[in-house]
Amino acid sequence: MRTNLAIQDTAVLDSAHVGDIQGALGTVRVDDTAPRSNWKSRILTLLAIMGPGLIVMVGDNDAGGVSTYAQAGQNYGTSLLWVLLLLVPVLIVNQEMVVRLGLVTGVGHARLIFERFGRFWGAFSVGDLFVLNVLTIVTEFIGIRMAMSHFGVNPFVSVSLAAVLLIGMTITGSFRRWERFMFVMVAANFLVIPLVFMSHPAARPMVSGFLVPGVQGGLTSNALLLIIGMVGTTVAPWQLFFQQSNVIDKRLTPRWMAYERADTVIGSVVVVIGAAAIIACTAFAFQETKLAGQFVDAGAVISGLTQHLGRLAGNFFAIVLLNSSLIGAAAVTLSTSYAFGDVFGTKHSLHRTMKDGVSFYLVYAAIILASAGIVVIPHAPLGLITTGVQALAGILLPSATVFLLLLCNDRAVLGPWVNRPWLNLVSSVIVGVLVVLSLILAVTTFFPNVNAQSISLVAAGMLIIGIFLASFVWYRRKSDTDVIDAPEERRSWRMPPLAQLPKAVWSPMQKVGMATLRGYLLIAVIMLVVKVVQLAVGG
Picture (cartoon, rainbow, N blue to C red):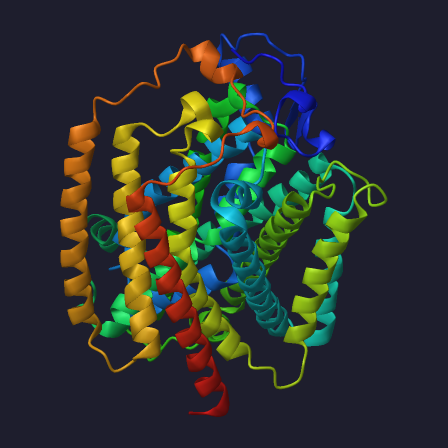
């Protein structure tokens, strides 16, 4: 049994990741071993630990998310609310695995991929994370620019002020101060609630939208692509890297697993409430108006709400867009800075001062300034960047989820914390669905004239066959549950230093699967580059 959690006995790479838990809403001392025997102590502990799960979820309701949900409501009413309900278990399952990896290993997602999958996949994961994150942050600054333009602020001024704010709130040298800044923005996210009431919602269409799957006007290719967009904007690769590193930076250990899982579940519920509120707002505000079914962008939504609901509603939506863009930019940028420090072994913690963690903060500031700079370039192809981000995120999502599933079955990494067979079955179904959606998105992006419904039927058939085979394998192996440990052993077990891990051995099936994934990614990325070039030159 491993009971010594000192940094030299674990794989933790940064000494700042060990010590008291200093959350926005409380502190838990490193030597606090007292049992939480009543509700008061449990709630106080949850408040101190809460943060990474809530922030990663609300951060995913960023500029792209607000725009996508507004489009769903404006073009399809409340008929797509059921998609959000289906996304709750996907979010919880994916992020729970990330939480487990972070708390048990003490090592970031990028570092684990390097160690267990080799340099190719490590370089690929960090490289695609960097490119995708920078482009995503550009879209956040586009959202900031749109929101502030509503208030008459010059784009250069609004983008510059936002960049200064984002950098300033991060380089304070205090994890607690950073988390408090983020909690303020999480709270501002709830402005969508009064915004919904301004649109005079009706209960029956809302309930029907959640409980009865369907699409207003029928399942067209455009509706299908929007559904895929809703999935893509809610389940993003950067989330995996962010939460795994953030729980480590908050100094959480396996002892606090249940609390961080609760934090993640709470975050999943909050993000769905926010998304549903945006859909409901645009659905009821624009029904029976000339703007129904005529979504353009988030800026046009602000104008439309001002026209039909009044100036206050337009102001509220602009503030929601601004706030979502800021929290998204902060979280996405930090996930990149964390990954950089994890891979190159540099100091990377929000607990460190600017002087002590200079490379960590410089990477963060450089990404923010570069992304902000792109947005203020005259005639920059901002629409093309937004389209490219959505397509690239969809293409790269399967690789991120496959790595996650494999790591959570690596006994050298997680020991008694590896996935149970039933969780592998559920996770495999989720990965299969994400792969199918990614494939549909890739094909329809490259070949817009292809019938998306036909592709979906073929892909769904392949997925059903895959689920059947996975279920058969699970049934044959369900007795292989040799991870039966006492609760105390699970709480105290930590991954040993990376140098002590045995070399990862892949089965023939895993080798074939990874080779297939590599081929798919290579072809899809090449085709995406060709498509972007064609759009750029007007082809």
